[in-house]
Length: 192
Image (cartoon, rainbow, N blue to C red; front, side, top):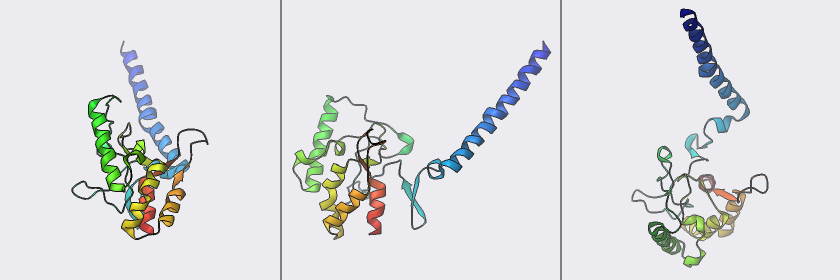
């Protein structure tokens, strides 16, 4: 009977070393060699300082939570862009709270952008499933161009060209929709 304990103990030690140390270190090494930026969090740096991750959205607001007009704005977030509290709103499309929230956002965004409420794209009104989506649609970004250009004293065509430069196409040419990473776009805007 003690012989079985010895076999079990040896198996546990071997598997612990293999699966608890060797395998994780091998995956870490492969990740660092093959995809170092992604393996380290897809961090964006500006002037040597980390300003965020291209995978996690951020809000561009003042201390009171008001949107800053000189920056492109991200989608609404049910998680408040807290990566430790990733969550969607979990409200169904006919939920009265969601409908009211969307109507409030539509009116607020239309007033902020100076456009007709019907011109506000859907992704500017609804939170993503994770609450951390870093991307907006090109339509949402282009809607914001006049405001951002005016707030920064820039030519609208230059800001529009920046949006087009930072628009990523569909994955593999046919999956998903084109997107604009707001943090990357705002970082490029800061360099102008």
